[in-house]
Image (tube, rainbow, N blue to C red; front, side, top):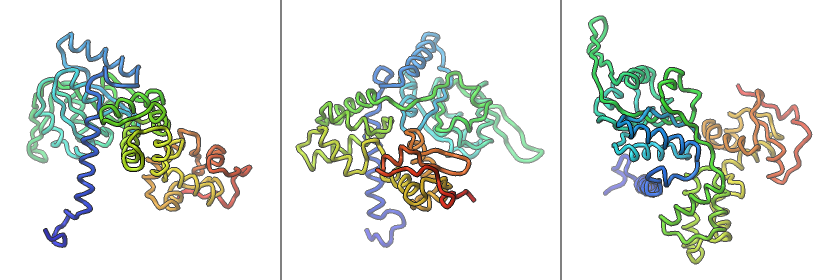
Length: 352
C-alpha cells in the first residue's frame, strides 16, 4: 500500500489504533464480572446488591441507576455487573453520541425486555433527547413525531421495561427532573490504598505478572486512588520488569519503572508537576488564571482544568480562588522550595 495515497491509514495511526484496541481488551479482561469480585466501594456495593436481589425476587426489572464520580472508579464496570447479575444483555452508548431525539428513540425501540441501557456521560446528552428520556424512564413509551410544523403528528410508541444506568463525572450538571427519575443513585469515591493493593494483586494474577507484596504496595500508593490508573501502572511496570529486570515486580523494580514513566511517590505525573512548577517558579505561587497557566505549560485549558487540577486540589497542592489558582505551602515543599509569605502583586494575574 502506498501510504501517500492513504487519507487516514498511516503507520502511526494504525499502530496507535492497535495499541488502543489492545488496551481496551486488557481492561475488559480485568473487569470484575459480578459484585462478589468487585473490590472497594463497600457501601455502594452492598446497597446495589440489595436493589438487584430484591428485583430478582420480585421478577421485576431493576430500578434505574445513576452512578457519579471521577473517571476510572468503576462506573462502566458496575453497569456491566448490573446486567450480569440480572441476567440480561447490556447496550452501551454515551451522551455525546445522542444529539437528536431520534437517535434515542431508535435505541430505546430496539431494547429487549429488562435489558440494561448504559448511558455514559449522561449530562452531555442533548436537551430534546433528555426530555424524551423522561417519559421513557417513567412510562416506558416515547412519542415519535412524524412530519414538521402544524401538520406534525406525535405517535406514541410503547417500549418494553428496561433499566437505565446513567454515569456522569459531573452530577451537578444533571437537571433535577432527570436525577429524580433514578430509583437508585450512588457516588463512587476514590479508593483507599489497601483496596488498590488488592486490585493490583488481582490484576497481576489475571495478567500472569510475578508480583511481590512490596511491589504491589508501591504501585497502589502511586495510583491516585483510581483502579484504572493502578491497572495501567501495573502493565507499564510489568514491561519494565520484563525488559530491565528478571520479570519479577519487586518494590525496587516498581519504583524504578514508575520513575522512568515520570510518576512520583505521590502519583503526580509530568503534567501535574509542570503545573505546580510553573505556578511556583514563574508566577510566585499565584493567584494566576487557568488560561494563563495552560498556555505556560503548553496544554489546552480543558486539559489542565479536567486532568491535572482535580488531583492537585484533592492532595492539597492547589487552591482555586476567585482571583485565580494558588499553590499551597505543600506544593512548594514538594518542589523543595521555600514558600513566600504572600503572593506578590506582580504575580496576580486574572482571567480575561
